[in-house]
Every structure is written in C-alpha cells, then in structure tokens.
Length: 302
Image (cartoon, one colour):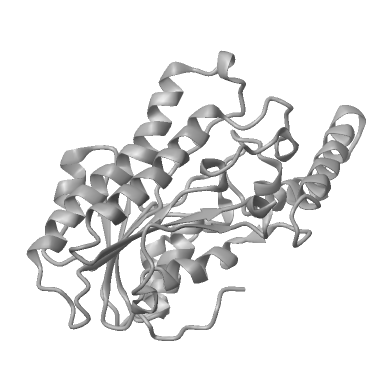
C-alpha cells in the first residue's frame, strides 16, 4: 500500500515521464494526492493492451477524478527526441521525474540485437539526459524557492544499474538483457553528474533504484517476478497439461527462489517505490542529492 498523503507537495508542479501505466502512473497519482499539479508525459495517453487492468482509464482521467481541483495535463512526448522534450518543458518547472523506460527480451550479449540496444539506450538513458538538460535550463531562469532551492529531479534507475542481477530472476536462463542494465547504469551516473554539477545552483538530483517488483509489464519480456499478476490470471484460466504445466511449475519455483534471496524474503510492490519518489521530490530531502536509492528489500546490501 502507498503511504498516506502528507501534503508535502502542495502547490508544487511536476513533469513526470512514462505516466500511461505502471510505476509512472502510480507516481503521478501519489503526487496529485500530495497536492502537486502534474504534467503527464508519454508517447500515448493510454496504457498498452498488454496491461488490460490499466486500459479502462487514462492516467489523466484518473488524476482528474482523484483531485479535480488540481491542474493536470497530458503532454504527448517522445522523450528520446530533443525537439519533443524542448516543447514539453513549460515556463515554470519545479520537479521532474524521469520515469519513462522500456526493456527487452533476456539475451546473452552475443545474441543481443543491435537496434534493440540502441532503442533501449535512447528511451532509458538519452531521455534522462534530454529531459534533465531542458528542465535545468528552465530552472536556472527561475527565481529560487524561499529555501534557496531551484528544483528537484528524480530519476528512475534500477538495481540492474548498481549490481549484476542473476538469471534466477528470469523465465529463461539467458540472464537480464545487457541493454537494460547498461541504460540503468548510465542513469545512475547521470544522476551523480547532475547532482555535483548543479549543487551550487541548489538543484537536487537523485535516483530511485527499484528491485524486482510484482507488477504486470508486457509479456514480450518474461521477467518472472514482474509478470506474477498476469501469470496468475492465465494460470486460473488455462488447463495445465504437459509442457504448460511444467512451465508454470518452473515459474513458481524460480519466483520463490529469487524472492528468498532478498533479506526481507519477498518481492516489492509498486506502492513501495512511490513513497521514496515523493520524499526525493520534497523539501524534506533538502540535504539529499546524488543518491542512487535502492528500494529492493535489502538485495543490494548483501
């Protein structure tokens, strides 16, 4: 469950990328509940068909239902395109959440597709560079807050950008895709570079590094622990015979084994990541910058 609203973002504004589904949608809802006006940036306003539970309403519709008194808008934006990003940035930007991201099928490096690598790097890493670049330009033009701070940037990275993630988390034994790990490692280093480079301007920049969590994402990427919800739905609707039954048995075994690797003995949920995303964008984090915050049940502490 996400934390109860505290009002710590009241009368603030934020741009959040990748809001049409998943973690981006959850962060947008958390910010609006905290009193923040949100610009929802994504390439399409609707969730992908692979996320059927999120298709009924767009994120903007949910925000307007949740807090009709707050100003929220949808901005169509390809975050890997400089022209789109420059147009997205308005005249007043206080907070930026670089959440947009994609992933690909697990593959060992010698089997990886060149174009897939380039696309993943563009959406996951180049987008952080571009969005931060144009938002910082605007922040530097603005008068600082009474606290002296000019703005807050929160990047969504991953534990895959901090440590190597073993094959136990995967449906196959090929291991995590190199493009995803490389892109999230780049996000972590961009976070530190921005934090140091703009510390004197009082622009905060931190990263959230989620661990494996239970949340449906496209079935084209069979990461076991993130497909639990969809797999359970399928499992309840399909007669398990032969290879299909063995596949589900393997999925369950691998999921339990990977969950057991966490000191907290389990897997996180999207709600566990939302709280840190609110904190790092608030004045409560006034003395925090350059931090890649692992939200992973202790996985990377081992």
